Image 1 (cartoon, rainbow, N blue to C red):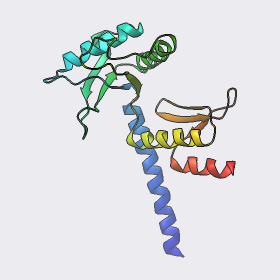
Image 2: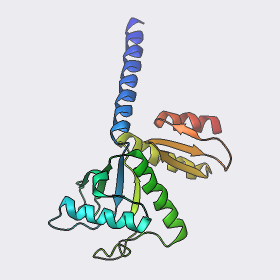
Image 3: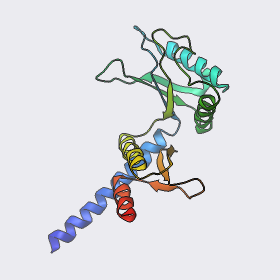
Image 4: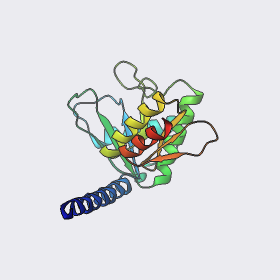
Length: 189
């Protein structure tokens, strides 16, 4: 019995530490964007990536100068064709403006593509999103799957958090972890 109590306490403590780590990661990534499908140049410099990002911001009608970019780099991946550019900005406001204008652009015009940016290679759509932690990427993946399977109309991220909404006008449901999805499944049954 004492072992079970100790185990339960340890489990609670581990969960609280995981939540703290997630909060720290979310804070660290609060100004970061992911840009996918930017063709890789060999050799590639930060200046080349910055030039591409400047062109994206021009297309999206977002004023952004180089002082607003803290860092920019390409992630490594097993498949060199599928890499992501991480753009770390100086403010959350600029990050949110880029995401907002990207969504607006894609609603009003054909999807932003490599062709629009005059990048080499076949035309591919450009994707811009928040840079989520590994845990939240998994939660977002599971939440999108859950939304499709259970006729939820909306699934999105904001400030590194995942949300679901069944229909227009309903309140959002915050999904913090995989367990929240499991709990939500049981309430629907």
